[in-house]
Image 1: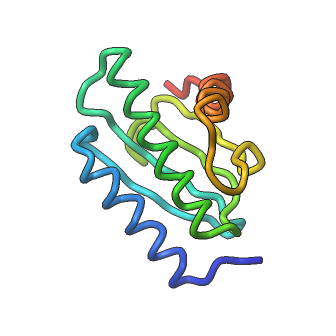
Image 2 (image 1 turned 30 degrees about the vertical axis):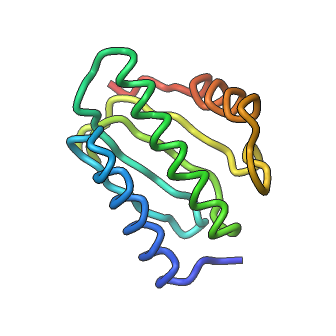
Image 3 (image 1 turned 135 degrees about the vertical axis):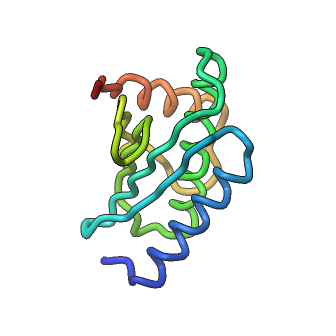
Length: 122
């Protein structure tokens, strides 16, 4: 089922507000395509490996929140960089996220799955 334009606007605003409010990012932009895929571009404020993984965790967490409120959302494409200067990307398939609460083990598996999709776009 397609998300309405108002649903898409709410999702984009919610994701952007949550990520901006985390204080982890110097750039955040989100879009939803015609197939209900969520695209998130971000630039972390800190670029050391711990901060980079932490920032990715915050992005994945925002996607998990969206799936709980909007079950018709599809996959997430997470891009490091700006829309004009993409450096790398990750994918998070909707099918990887169960309905309801996730256990610590499920969250760990999800993050490892997402990390395994990395593509260098430089």
